[in-house]
Length: 164
Image 1 (cartoon, rainbow, N blue to C red):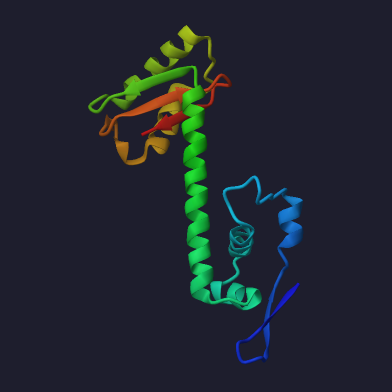
Image 2 (spheres, one colour; image 1 turned 45 degrees about the vertical axis):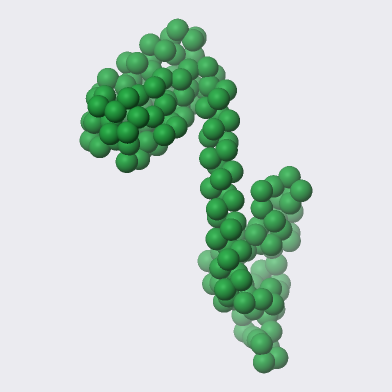
């Protein structure tokens, strides 16, 4: 357990669980991660609903510094997810461009046809596939209308990836 000291030297009642064991248990390695060790600590504590002020006191820094570390960590995670999504899209044997103005109801047929040609099995039913695509495409889909174009990729395992 980390016990924080307040800036004026009084012992604080704020107690924050030590994150070293947790990070080791889940296999965090700062040499192989886009996160620094401090970023991982802060995210782990924030995910356990610890306040930035409590974390700052425990780590001997300011709340503003914790806020900055957390923001950088979340941005690094976002970029890492985007990079993985991009790499998955590059490797997908099936890639179907969906242009603006298309009807979402026509998309599953195009995906199934491309998958059949590539010998890839999609496990989604048409309604489920439309939902997966619509959810992943976000604002690029409005109702049944494709507003902004995107690419639907399907991995060899049949996983559907949407790239705006």
